[in-house]
Length: 390
Image (cartoon, rainbow, N blue to C red; front, top):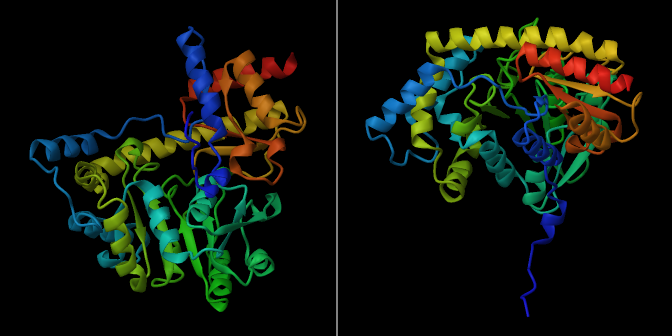
C-alpha cells in the first residue's frame, strides 16, 4: 500500500504558470516541424552581451568559484551604488544593496523579513503572479486590487486608502509593470509612500524593467524616500542575463541584518561567476549594446501596438516600458485561455492568457510579449489576422 503524501496546505494556493503548458505544447509542435511565433515568453531574445559573457568566462578561468559574502560581492554592490548615482543622481550606500539569485531571491528575502502569519500585502490585479505566491509562502495573504485603464493598471494613493486593512504590512507595485508595461509617475509614488507611512507600513517597488522605458525618463523610487523603501531590480531584463540568475534589492538600513541572516540560511549567496559577470554590465561598451537593444524593443512596440489595435484588440493604454502589451480580447472570445490554445494550435502563435496575472477579468485579456524579432512579429500578426478572419 502506497504511503499518503503529506503536502503543505499552502501548496493548494500556489498556482502554476499556465503559460508553461502552452509553451510545452509549442515546443512539441516545433519538434513536429511546425513554425511557432513566440509572443508568450517574458525573456529578451537577445543573448547576453559579449562583454558580460567574457567577464563570466574570465572569472571561471581565474578560479572565482567560491562563496561570496551572503549580501553579495562587495565590488558588485559598490558598482550598483555607482550606477544609481550615474543614472539617477541618487546616493544609495552599498551597505544597503543585497545581491540575490534573481529578483525572485529578493522577493523571498523581503517577504520573509516582513510577514507574520495572517499579515497582508496590497498589490495590483493584474500583476506578476509570483508576488502573491511569495506572500502565501510566508503564510500571509494578498489583497488584490482590481485596476483598470483609468489608473494605467496601477495602484494609486486613493486605492491604497480604500484597500489597506488592519493586518496590512506593505503595498507592492511594479514600474514598469508586468503584464501591462505601464509606469508609476513620481507624484503618485510620493502619494502612495505617504499612505503607507501613515499606516505604519512599507512600500515595495519592483523596478526590474527599468532601462526598458520608451519616450520618457523614469526615476527610481529611492528618490522619493532614500532610506525606507524596498526596491527590487535584476540583471535579467534590461541587462539580458536571465539564465545567470542574479538580481539585487535595496533595503532600508534597519532591515539589513535580518536580510543578511535570511540570505545565509535560504541560499547562502548568489552565484559567484554570475556576480563577476554582472560587474561588466556597467561598462560603457556594454551600455552601448544595451541601449541599441532598448531601441529595438521600442521599434517592436511601435509596430505591434497599432497592428493589434487594427485587428480589433482593445489596448487602451500605450505601455511606457517593459516588453508587453496587455490586450482585451473580449471581442473575439469569453475564454482567453481557450483562445490562446486555439491560436497556438491553429495559427502557430503563442501568447499568454490573462489567468496567469490574477482574478480581475482574466478571461477577457491576453498578454503579447514583443521579445522576438520584428520579422517574426510581422509574421505573427499576419497569422492572427487570418485566424480571426476564419
